Image (cartoon, rainbow, N blue to C red; front, side, top):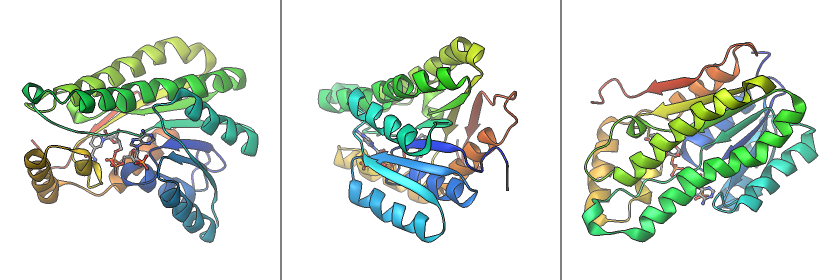
Length: 247
Ligand code: NDP
């Protein structure tokens, strides 16, 4: 359908559910080659079977984005199998909201390790190839929370604000190599993200909010497709979207 999507090799972290999974489906249907990474390999294999059944080209590798070597292995596998990497979608993330006074230090560390360091490891894995290719596209996932903090979301919002800064810094640095950078900042989208909240009372509140107002994950997939499908000399720097009903 779009010549800047057909045949493009896209690596997606956090592809076993939610936004990553929806993006894999949409881009595969539009003719992209998909390389999936996440920890739950059985979920990735089921998705691969579905994409192959529908005529898509795809492979999966079990990947924990908190380990830089595993992220590198994922990107290496993409290049080995398909000869290049056109798009790196750093999407894996979690959102274990809690007020700081509850001192959930393990949750803070996991959030920083996945949402912030995981994005950096994705950049580290993809950048050498893209520099060599003299073309590429790195897409990072921030959030409405990267623009606005609320009680209970300080650490999550901090990682997402960091992703905004990393993306803009990266943009300025890599434009000489014709590498595009996009950061996508969604509002409430219906995924498994509320399951990452470890505090039962907060999890119940987040679930209630999502059940009331979240929009389908396809909204995010279309944003990725929009950014990808521009001509190579057009870089969509940021996409901020949310449910029409969201504050
Ligand atoms: P889901 O919980 O549905 O998906 C999260 C994905 O991240 C899963 O595939 C999970 O796979 C993966 N993941 C988590 N930890 C790791 C890890 N250590 N290594 C590799 N993969 C990991 O949530 P979403 O799809 O909603 O989240 C995707 C991104 O979108 C996140 O960055 C989130 O912050 C962001 N976002 C989501 C919004 C929403 O409302 N849904 C709003 C704004 C931003 P597995 O467990 O198999 O490893």
